Length: 283
Image (cartoon, rainbow, N blue to C red; front, side, top):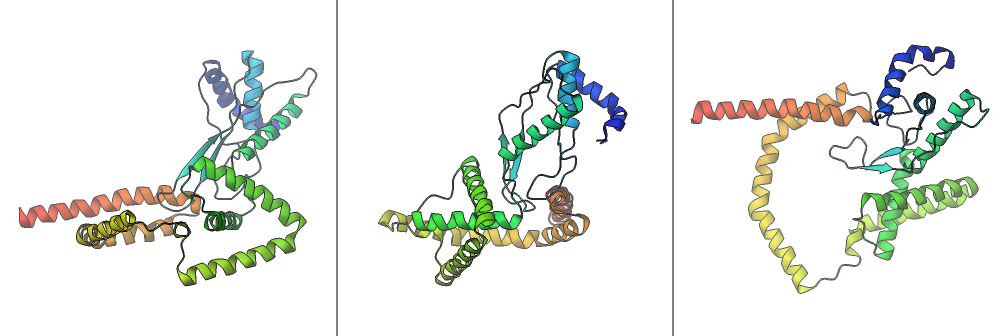
């Protein structure tokens, strides 16, 4: 935790253990931002990762491989969202002849940050991500592209959109605001007439209509009754889970973990009690 060069001796035992693990070709996972957070961009880095890598090079005689890994959440704080684990290219770990060790630590820390910026969206705000997804949806409507692509493909398109948006907002802020207003007007029109992106290029063939009718009948006759019973039977533990989770968490980065834990406890308790009552009164 100490980032002051004069105080790093307090980390000596932990760092020495890291050297031993790297010598044995083990893997160490480090979060260089030091703390979990729900920001849309990287926070300032601590120097521990760079110190361990350069120290292992000096102590073990060979450089460890440093891989930047980006975690990109589709809907941070939304239950059952997806996440893209993006692994970047290895970073070179070296100490040039005559290079000051502290300067080398700072250099490698900056290289590590640049590596992580390449594998994360790293946007200025969550509002920017919301805008980029709306722009992506607009092009789906206009060009007929499929939205259901791989997470890696969507990451690349959002990454390019984000970099372009940041540059244009810096160079032409008035034009960006004008485009946003036009986009909002377009979305209001789509909502008013009930147009969804996948419907624009849909061809209503007899086979497609037949499948739609059969699926609708199946939904009404079988899925809907079961779904209604499931919803009514789960409304109490679901409400308790959401209410208690919102009260005990302090941010988006805690919400998912807390809700999973709360769900396991409350739904297990509710269904267990329900099963016991059924067994008691119905045999």
